[in-house]
Image (cartoon, rainbow, N blue to C red; front, side):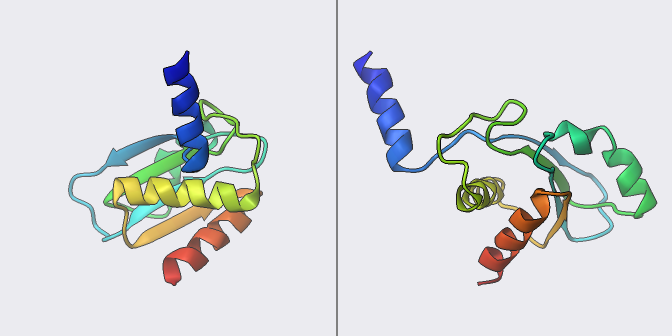
Length: 125
């Protein structure tokens, strides 16, 4: 029990959450971009995954990779007591860093749009 308590305390101190995401790399990419999908408030990553092939075909995108995330408290992601906009943005940035994404194209919907703007501001600085 002490180990579990210490682990939870460590995660809280370091503001580390477990965000669920799906990451797919593509062979023969035609553009030098990684595509990141951010869903709206009441859905999860499946909102995009169910339609991603159609979206990529319509837009004629052949990216290096595709990542779809589930925000905190959605899908398989953990729920945090502090689901602030800043924490959502930080968690998305953590995924970007973990996967070493670059030249990112962010496609978002609803609540995901202000989050994508916050991520863009952070990545631009």
